[in-house]
Image 1 (spheres, one colour):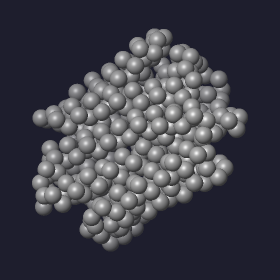
Image 2: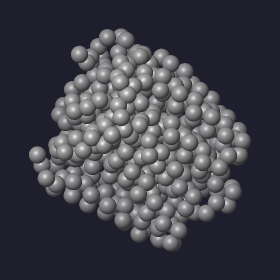
Image 3: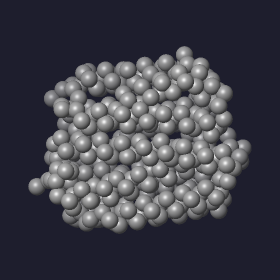
Image 4: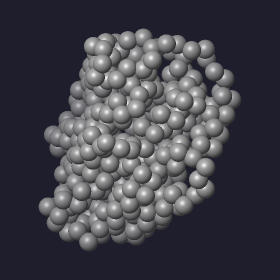
Length: 388
């Protein structure tokens, strides 16, 4: 029987250890991205190499998804989180030694592909119902705060000019995340499922109306967010005249707004209705479109904070629905792996299109218009799809 997160002390300790590991590893991930961008620019890499960083990272999720979910269910989740952070530590060390950032991010992505089913898969083992929504809100808030702090940390490191030394600092953060993962108790192991079970799980979730809609919404959200992370930096440098270190802080404002949205969703008395989700997605897309009309840093800050609130309010209830449906239909690790497969697969597609657009010289405004419109149209189409 699942226990609420405000129940037994052991449950609270386990959740705190999972959240602590996530805070540290995500903080290092986001700082490392800014450092890697600086390294690419210092090496006069082509413009398409920047979005390719994330493509390498997300592609690992897609390729390893059939194995990542069963692996997360088979191994104690804390042990798996420990090993992934050690792999990331080695990646940061390799970057400090002059390794290609694209190769390093691909290797880190291999570990991260197994990490997400472990950290999200353990939540439905600890909580259910409204407590599960609150646990998801806590996970999203910790992740968003780590994005905020990681981007700020990476920007400061880039501004200092000590980029190689920064990689050593980030390796230390991965070591602390690994230590936190040691405090996660053992979760029940299950027999290793064949890779074919992943595709059966994919079909099962796509046939379930609630799971299908939630998967579609979160996939569209994260695909747009993947492009928006780079788009905001390019926009801040071109439209607002900010340097890389300053431009990299603007996505942190979006993340800060997401904390507010996630907090509101976590304290809501009822799950978001389908119409409410569509409204939030339309407003989110409108916020992206409004970027083309902003020419001051203060206006940009207000816009990104408001857009982030909508994003957090959109994401948290959708994740909770997916976990509730996933745990009732299959093993939690496999369910999260399916989610990662679809979300990161669409992210790779969006980033590839963005990279092609950059290579072909597409204007910044045109790219913003396409991204904002895609958010509105795709979520609306999902909402109008066949209901069970």
